[in-house]
Length: 133
Image (cartoon, rainbow, N blue to C red; front, side, top):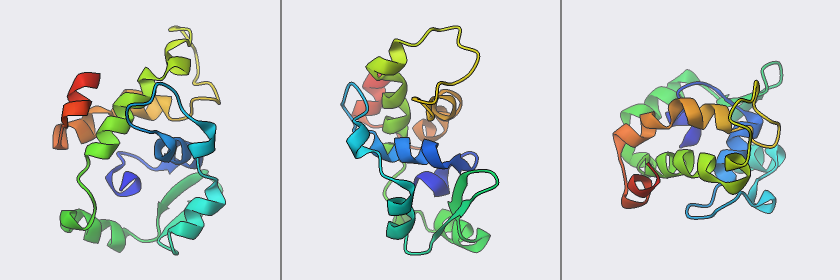
């Protein structure tokens, strides 16, 4: 769902952190962040890892098109909206200096959620997501 709804290709660490977000938590539990090998293994060949760009994508544009044209196959987009709003509210993120020049390696999803949290939120907002805005 994250990859098919992403506004741009996700870097491996961004996707790993996105999948590790537990809605309602105050910080990211590193034990919940899956390893890249686990992600690719669980995807049963539907995902590819582009080494040159360090991004994870669906294995074909046809699959992307199919998923977008059949939205009932995946859950509604709200888990990505909630995760995109939860991540910047984690305590370790809130403690970062507001004038950072680059995203710290400990928060790889921060750039993505800062720029694109509104896209899944426009599709479907839940009660939890509304509380985070």
